[in-house]
Amino acid sequence: MHKNLRSFLDSLRAEKEIVDIDAKVDPYLEIAEIHRRVIEEGGKALMFRNVKGSEFPVVTNLFGTIKRIELAFGRKPQEFVKRAVHMAEDLLPPKLGKLWGYRDMAITGLKLGTKSVRNAPVLEVQQSPPELTEIPLLQLWHKDGGHFVTLPLVYTESPVSGKHNLGMYRIQRYDDETTGIHWQIGKGGGFHYYEAEQRNESLPINVFIGGPPSMILAAIAPLPEDVPELMLASLLGDGKIPLAENPDKAGLRVLAESEFVISGIVPPKERRMEGPFGDHYGYYSLEHDYPVIRAKAVYHRKDAIYPATVVGKPRQEDFFIGDYLQELLSPLFPLVMPAVRDLWSYGETGFHSLAAAVVRERYAREALSAGFRILGEGQLSLTKFLLLTDKPQDLSDFKSLFEHILARVDWRSDFFVFDRTSFDTLDYASGKINHGSKAMLVGVGDAKRELKREFSGSLPEGIGKAKPFCGGCLVLEASSYDDDQEIGRRVAECGEFDEWQVVVLHDSIEYCESTEKFLWATWTRFNPSTDIFAKSQKVTNNHISYDSPIVIDARMKSWYPDEVEVRSDISDLVDKRWNEYFGK
Image (cartoon, rainbow, N blue to C red; front, side):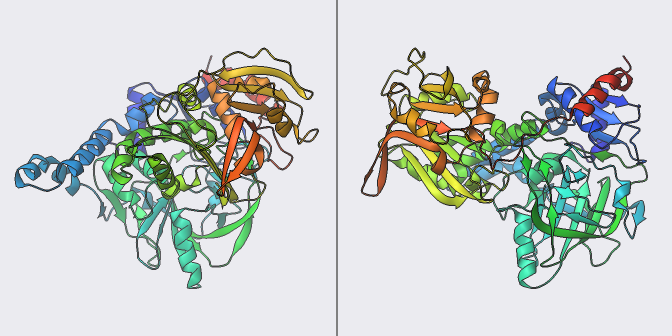
């Protein structure tokens, strides 16, 4: 496939999937708003050729449609993964005849990994000391703390084992020579930094910008901790990844085909306030102390192109990339977790807030074992709410899946809430960063009930409107959390909703108008241990059994960060200049 960004851009041009914008545009808010409008309409990739304050063009929306995802990666990686899984299952026990039948896999395997090269396009221009302000980093939202690298390929190596990590951790530019590095919990680069700090050593670091599309996908893939990302990038790119020696002999090797490299160190025990940043949850992640990158040099091509993405409320580019990754890696789940037949995380919720799995139930409560296995696996351990069933389902069809589970759940034995667990760093529903709770809902076997689909009762005080989201699930428009914090408990106990399995409290009934809105506004706005109520609860042998309805309070709380919203003057500016951008 594509060995660098330029090869991919050539494919986009051949397919008429990219638009050039020659009008002068501002990397502060303006580019981001243009991008958001285009991606919302399923539009093309955007090449901004005249960027205020920089000589470098900016390209965005590279992966904003299924078609461009396929142009970037093709079908070969999926075919290889499926065949590799089949081989692993078929070769136990190994037999010579069977091994010969998979000789093509060995040939492909020989192409994987990295290779050393002497000539690296990214080293055409070498700048030391660096001038990071020359790179056209974007500011996406007006309350962001500054300008960020939004497609950084952050490369580190363990000071203990030498194993590498390639991850996508946001980079906030402070000045010409320093940036923040947003290492969240459960991330490989953060583990490397922890090891370096324990030795009171600086951690060498490279931030690659641009390069093969396969590197971007590998950087965000939820691989097990010790699985090398460069191996996946090599598979996706159908060839070895070229690396070159760093002109700074103390630095790490550089990705030869990237557009830019920020090369430097992360000193031990140095922190600086990072953020806020409007992230892919659709809210601002707040200011917190994070490690600092001290850049020693910037390398770039003579005619470098700066690739960027824009994050915010779903659906953005990360949604399409995430879904492709799930489809690519899904054949591996039964191999790694034999009781798990299928698994899906919902991009509409920021991925970590909600996941669902089809699991095996060959003996009583095997589904629980599979659920615990999922919650203990790598980045899946950050899942907040896990749905489990044993019958084949299209997990991407949430409404159908939810009805299937609600028709089968026994609330006395099949619903579990675990308090005092780790929490995704970007999820503020618990009020304490990195700390929160999880829930697991099991619906296996045959249906136990017909689901209620229409509401005709009276509404208690504090409830303005009621509308079914799907069979068994009712959405209520409630008064604000600040005005009435106990309404969730009263709704659960009042008796008007006893025929419903789940009742969701929202600030607006509009959140049940589409599955996308419902998923986003529900699962990003509650902490299971504090925001779930039941008609009654009973503790037996240290197990909590529930009686429906189960009420989820998904109203905005006072400690939640703000939703990301476009500033009115920026919206007006883009309205005014729209024909100028696109020559209409």
